[in-house]
Length: 331
Image 1 (cartoon, rainbow, N blue to C red):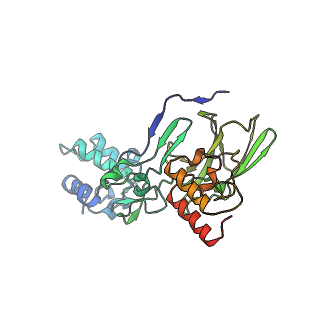
Image 2 (image 1 turned 60 degrees about the vertical axis):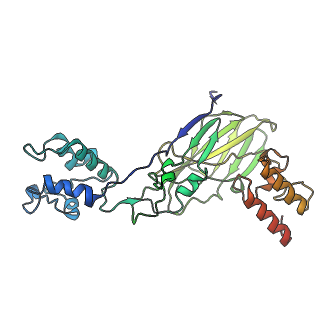
Image 3 (image 1 turned 135 degrees about the vertical axis):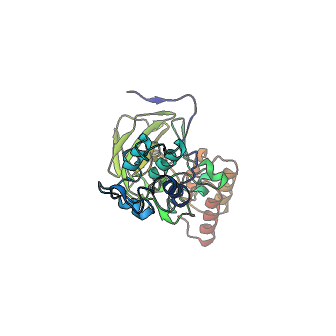
């Protein structure tokens, strides 16, 4: 069976550029005012009046002239791009034609629009490095470089817009605490039905990737929230799974990837870092030490220190463990 074998670290940077939306009032309407409304204003040639946004979107005698998100099939763009309109020696410049195409492809809104769902990709997570995953030696980076300058990328939550374009991209995927493994002879089954996608998102399907070390099998797609992998395995293998979520609006390269999910992770009880069946200051010290050394994942029972089940070990886990030890309610 073919496998994806990678000896080099390859980085796919997928949301690395920002954009500046076209403003209809200051960039589009002035073009129409100077080039078009002598025919398509009060006189409404062909029944089309483009002296205002509302009139433009009403279309003309032959129907709509703008198809939002699709400039190539929008009649208005077709005619101005071909030079058919405006008539005479009054053609639009290449830049004017391009900015109209961009405006249409952004959704043809009167006001700048964007993603208004705080659960979508956001600049805080991008700047924190939360959107970088490693699958079989390939680094998938969905960070937005423009966040550093205060701009946001397409699909990112934008707190400054007041009109939703319905095009949010989502990063949420199952975490360890939401996945149940069942291991039998010749098969590994797992269920992630406890995973809850963002309320406003729409999941199309899931992609399952099995990796042994840095070698990964081709992905398998499923619309279910459970999967059974039938194959011969060794419990000593460095075996892990990635469950990727295919959200409706995410680009083809923008699957939301889970953390590595380990079926043979024989972990001690949560918070019991020394596996002695008790929770006390020794566990807190052990967790603090491995967090400082960035070695929790390699520790024999380090997995027990991931108190919030997010696949990382940091001060939030230390605080959570300290709180449950003080309250005597760990385990």
